[in-house]
Amino acid sequence: MASVSSETIESRASWVAAGVTVGVLSVAFGAPLAVVVALKTITTEMGTDRSVVALAGALAWVGTGAGGIAMGWLADRIGLRPVVAFGGIMTALGLWLSTLGNVWCLYVGHGLLIGFLGNGAVYAPLLIYVSRWFDRRRGTAIALISSGQYVAGVIWPTVFQLGLDGLGWRTTMRAFALVVVATILPCVIMLKPPPEARRPAVMAGVGGGRRTVLGLGPNMVQALIMVAAFCCCIPMAIPASHLVAFCSDIGIAASNGAAMLSLLLGCAFISRQIWGAMADRLGGLRTVVIGSTCQMVSIAAFMTTQNEAGLFMISAIYGLGFSGIIPSYSVAIRDLYPSADASWRIPCVLFAGMSGMAVGSWWAGALYDFYGHYGVAFASGVAFNALNLAVVGFLVVAQARSRRIMPVVAA
Image (cartoon, rainbow, N blue to C red; front, side):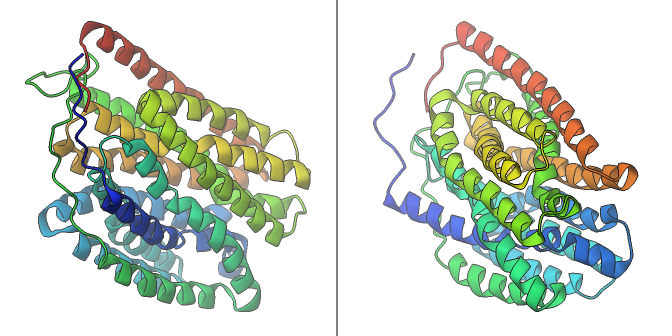
């Protein structure tokens, strides 16, 4: 194994960049949660099926993933600041459009404006940006900034529920649109360019003219990681999108359901820092296996009780278990591929994962409309999770074989 230089690109400025990014994402990821909290109210008012309204949240996830591919490319060419500022403005416009009362307004507002042009211009470009500030503690940093989603989940569901009760869902969305603009635009000014890496990262099967990754074609490994991300995010979306409605269906107050969702995402925020440190130590793929196993066990537990205290406990355990999966995929991409590839490979994985979130959100709503309960949806989540473990397990075995054949030159 080659010697490792003590030189590092990490500095105090690296953590400032990460901190500002957490603040931006903590607000940006609040936008899709409004429709989750107001799912039953909007469904009743529009006189439609639950799956129809749940599809708006699904489109926001798909749009965020697809937009990240285009916006990651664009940020590399015109700079990060204008792209993120544009994303904040589009997110606010999407919230306003969604309040006009038509299903198509809800879909365009969430899928195109909040998703593709909004969070798509915020999440993937910022994740790539922060990954370029770190070389030694990249997993910890990516886990930290990805926790912005869970900070949003802790704060905003309860706030939205209060707004829903006192002001109605339309006024609540419009007020949050103002919060988005007032928060994100000032933060953009604080985003400084990352330092150039002073030494290239070369991992097993990457760089040096090699044409394989883990003994396979680079794009084949990319495709398998994307399949794995898609499969693990289907079950991930079911509690995140339907927990409040599920609680209401079984006689638990909507305010307690929103508190349960906040607890789930709060535990996810706390544990994500642990998962990030684990990814630094074990690598991205192995961390995905551990996190995915925890997710499968805990989502199965949702089928075992309808007791309020029991569901609070399961929600906390679920939050502790699943939160390290998506950041670990990004760490795996940076482990396996050169930095220059990050601007398109990471957004492609995020697109696959968010497409899984979209399918999971819609799928659970469709199964509920057909069966009248969420039990089948939770069971299908376990099945998709098992498929995810099969794919990632194959990649971990391939990685172990690759390391035995070829020594790693550490970044």
